[in-house]
Amino acid sequence: MVRNDWLRLLQSDQTGIVRFAFPGYPQPEAEIRLYNPRAVCSVHGDKGCEHTTAAYFALYQRFASLSEWLAEWRQSATQTAAPSRTAEKTPEAWREVFDQLTGTFPSIGDNVPFHMISSAVTLYRQQVREAEPLEQEWKPLFRLYSGLFGLRAVTAGAPAGGFSIGYDRWQYGRLLDQLTDGIRDELKLLSTSRRLFAADPFYHDLEELIRTLTLSAENAQGRWLSVYREMWESLFSGSDARQRELGTLRRMNEEGEKPPALRLMTAYLEVLSGVPATGLDAPLSENDLPLFPSYLDMASSLAENGHADEARNLLMSLVPQIGNYMESVSFLDQRTAAGRLADLCRETDVPDETAADILFRCGSAAEAEYAEFLLSRDHYREWAAYHHLNRSSLERIERTGLKTMIDEAPMEAIFLMNVHVEEQIAQKSRQNYREAVRILKKMKRAAKKAGRAEWWSGYVGALRRRHQRLRALMEELEKGGLLS
Image 1 (cartoon, rainbow, N blue to C red):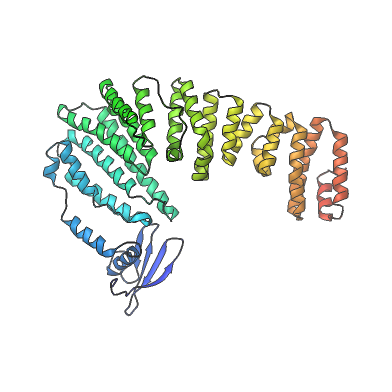
Image 2: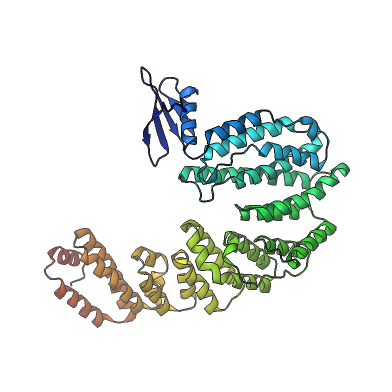
């Protein structure tokens, strides 16, 4: 049906619903809901049939070759994991098995829908269960390998530009969390269990494996760094292993290899080995932006463990790239980063000027933190100027310290609120007039606090003369007791 072009596209919209019609009587229709994912046929329902399969194939061939996929699928059908290979109990045999299993993951460019990744993971997990060793004591180690290779396959196959459907993006994040949590569970089990003497080659292999996977990761670099760190904190606790790894990382630095993750990996091992972390004062480059949250993790860890100077040096190295990072992520991620930067400024005792510069670079994401910082330093005029500059809404102003301003710098608060009074009056609706009266009452209280009753009377008189033709406004001012 697909090759003969029998399908006719009926609907395709932003919600991820695609409908096809087929020849025949009564005319069958197939609907695919990419956000579920779910396919329904008007004849056979949601049980799966030739119509829904053809609809999936028709979608697939719009961005990839159906012939190539069919050839790969036929080849993969003959490549099943051989349990005898896992029974060999060697790192090389296990790596071969997992390379074979993850080799069937789709590689279809930037437009891969999530349901294809999800289907590949489901098949992978099923094959892993079938290839799992029978001996109970070997299962946690085998599952750790399967988790690492699965995470590599999923992150390597992710769309470079993200998912076009928000639900797919959320589902992909959940899948990464599930894979990472599975790795953590096996690490916890292995770190609290008796270590098998026969498993020593696997532990040595894991040292090299996690290093290679982390350094070579192109996507989800921060997630790989967290896995690397947790493995060296819980699984490789011996000083000999840590010194060996640290020596390897330092040699890579000396040889001029500069993968983005190498600097942080070296710092992690130095801290775990009890030696001062080095290279933290070097400024970040734009290639390091995906690891910005990981650098914040490192700085927070240093500060919590009493290494304030090292944490401060690392924080200062982040400053030039704060603006670029904020522009590259969602507002939710911006808010998270701004809050963490504000915490680091407090924990590392950076100078006031430096803290102000850091928070100012965060833009509107650090509005609350920056306003709190200015008020804590009694910089009331700067607080008002900041909100003037950003044209902050009254809601934001009230949320970030207007009450404190009325108590401590009432006239600065009055001048700021006056802007919003004029904006409300300019809307010329009774609802806006009521909001203007609410703001004016705050201004009246601030004027009383400042001992400027005469000035307030003159202000209200001028406001009344300027807008005397706005009868609804005059009525609201009268109701609010502002004209008496």
